[in-house]
Image (cartoon, rainbow, N blue to C red; front, side):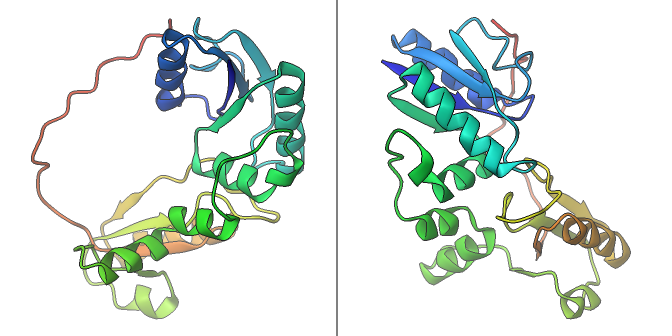
Length: 212
């Protein structure tokens, strides 16, 4: 069986770990990347390599290139490895030569929408930090450090959004306003979120990843 991993970011360690695990399980693994010298493309777990543009830069070209890779490589499954790739392939699933086993696109969007997830968690009784759209009124009320993040990492239509927005902890209103303006300028929708302080209950040591 053949599987295609789609990863247009250079340092996606999750995609690399996935390719290794699938190869060890007996799958033949291909990758669709923008740079075949990235972590995934350079891995010995990859048998076939296909070049595709990032969906944030050229969604039409991205979907067409992934469809071509799936067809020419006779893949049985496709695994997008980021929010942007997942949302773009979900939106244009009818252009793919294989079935994408996802629920309706509206449900996929809700699963990645940070504001929707926060509201759904609160409705279920799960404690969440307050999260709100970064309006002028919300920014004017900031009196302490606040988190600024993008509501979604991809949106349909012209934009200059990166493949993955960082999350910023801003010290004050001025810094938060600058980050909000940056997200707006790229075509994204910024959110403000409460800073949750404290330590994780379990310490995690991340090993250095070597490409093999």
